[in-house]
Image (tube, rainbow, N blue to C red; front, side, top):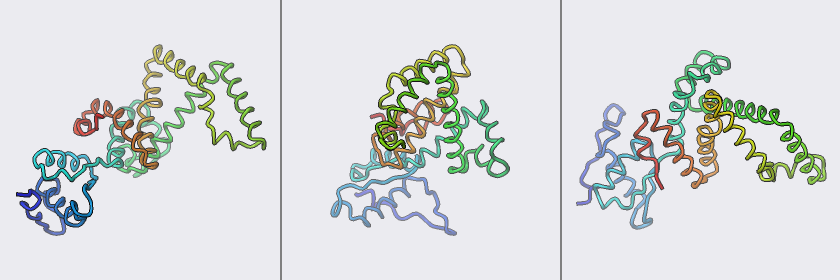
Length: 256
């Protein structure tokens, strides 16, 4: 018997759906989607996006019922991005981010950011903190070696000359990183050397160059619909979920 037909619709009482996160409810919902989109007639497959629990249930159902081979579960990126915020704050809040929060936010906003319950506010706070720290890190690197500063200024002059207008059109079309690979290598070596000598430097360099790189990368992948970048960032965020006891998210992160 088709499992989609074997279950009746869940009971709705007082406007609330009982047992929303259950196999029975999920099968009922899949049945509605199957009928509405005429899967098997008008289309061969149906992508079903959802949060972590939804994804987990559908994966389990597909193992139980071969008839659900038309369902393609898809872990919602916004959901994953939102649930990475508490993990980041758990790791970095008491180490220094909490001090920044109290300087720039008050009252309800401070509470929303510190508890990661307000996605947009927490998102902006993390990105702004990351940008400020990254700028500081680059500034320390540049002023640590005068030759690096000279190389950067020379490259800027060349870009202005190429533009032919004294503005920066070619600078934006061709990022400096493309022609400053050697400088970036020096920057990475500088960070690694400093991190080996100072645990605090290593801790915050991980925030700038590892965890927030993947967080912001996932955000950009969502906005640009870059599936390859999405997959790469999610895989790299796996250790963060694992270290902070968010094993359910780690389990559903694709491994290939």
